[in-house]
Length: 442
Image 1: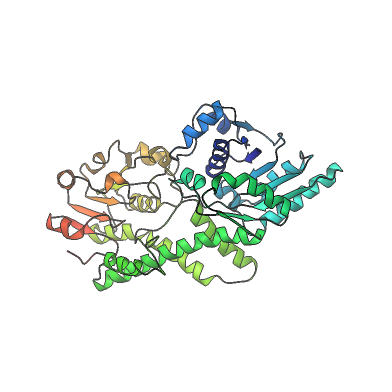
Image 2: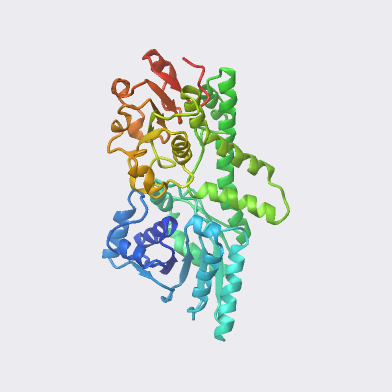
């Protein structure tokens, strides 16, 4: 099939590349010519394992191309796949993309909204396309479809190629058949297609993110309570996770969730509730708990060193909001580092992927004044530091050389924001260890 994908952000690139990988002819469009030029040159703007190879292979094979400017290619299916932050902050960008499609289509087309935008956006897409057709004085049949993404950063290519489910909001049989044909290669083992109403599909995306966020925030609240009562939250986690009604996914205590997708979907749901006069108490509480949780790491350091940390150096392991990505949107590391800098501390940080990305989130002055130092190796970050804080649970951080850590740190203080380490073992080795919901152990 011939496909046009509007947007070369995280979702757009993965969508376009994976459809091309299955033999379709795909054009990916972006309004930013510099971004397109970089992609054509092989500089992929997002990190995702396996994505660069798929893009290169399919570009060479002629199945995948990139272009800038307005839509000028005629396709059977048009995907609007703007970045999550763009679509949520300014849904008008999604509608402008739809207008551009309405200005060029002459034959039946399916227009697919894959952007994470408020419920009702897909219906508005149909309205603006129809407006453009009327202005042109032409009658062209088209259908609009909602096809939300459920990709997990770090494994997005695998998620797309082997999805748990493919949610499609559709109204006509013709559009349903077109989407079935498009996705048949992705559900050969068993039918993963889930057809539903357009608004149902849009809400499914936001509700799924909200459920995951709720599990995380609930577990963090229980962890904080456990900490007050001398309870080992890790034992509690195992105990409740064994319940088939709950499961182990997303009940790991930590320093808060981040990323572009869950956070934006939560905010979108809360705003939708406000727009229709409904107070989303649970969702607001989930968000408040998550924001509070991001302060926990600084609070633990302040309990150890005081609110004024002038003269102190803190080592930070992990900048990305989770392992497997360089995405720092809503990352707990941002809250921690900003609070440390405000308190007068110097920060030495390391992350396997997000070092360059971090430069976009902090002013140049903190680097120029060496208040924030990006280190080339995880152990370099520990040199002369008064404490080490684990923020992101990258694999190289999981079983480090604790003898080396103890020698490098000025004080053997470890703040474990992801409960990766054994408090009993570390305390027996002379470390001052603090986790999430495990402070009174050892």
